[in-house]
Length: 341
Image (tube, rainbow, N blue to C red; front, side):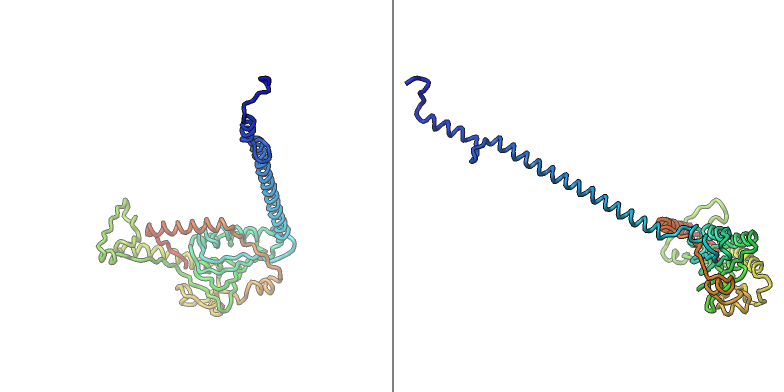
């Protein structure tokens, strides 16, 4: 027997067992099988990733398509100001509702902008200012009053009618007095030609609590109307004089606007309010009616178009935030401005 053919006894058994240690039951080496498994897992993961990305793309596409569809529908269904207001003759309607104040829906800026648009539109044959307001700032009310007078002077052939809804009192009536004619419901609240300034005093409460007020000012009247300081007769007289001046300004503008239609009633300028039916006899208004009846029977048109500006949700949010901050600052400073309210 040659050396090349000689093997120790049991060596074949050892070779077989050693080779089998690197193979699985299928006879494939473990390293090869492991690589195949990883490649298979990689393909599955990549396939899932591609499918997920494809589904996400289609989801975005369908969302954008749906959004675009609704935008197109809204644009088609929402007529523009030119197509809505410029096609035929109509009566322009402007709403003045709520407290008349800067930053509010019934601010001079908002109302005056709508008034200018209405008077500038050749198809608006008349303007109706619908008032539902208890009053507010004499400054804001005065600015609306002045703008109405100015626009009436520029457009003498275009009438402006004030129609009082639930209430047209104080500053609300101040604005109405600038109109050509005033109408109201028989149960509307009309009048309150006066000015008010109110507040609270906490001096006695602070004394009971043992709280001492410490304030330093560089002016004699800088601490005017401080609710934590005792009242002063001199301050009361000065403040009352200012209220009287504002009240007289109110009276003068009402007389100027209403003229000889006002009756000589003793309580007319005392801040008293009346129903619409009573206001007719006092000359505060010219008749009873609503927006529709005035448009139909006085102007002679059935078509009424709204010119009131709409505030966006963001504008409303910022307005409410600004008003809240302003009121908070006003309370902290002890300010209480006179109101036609």
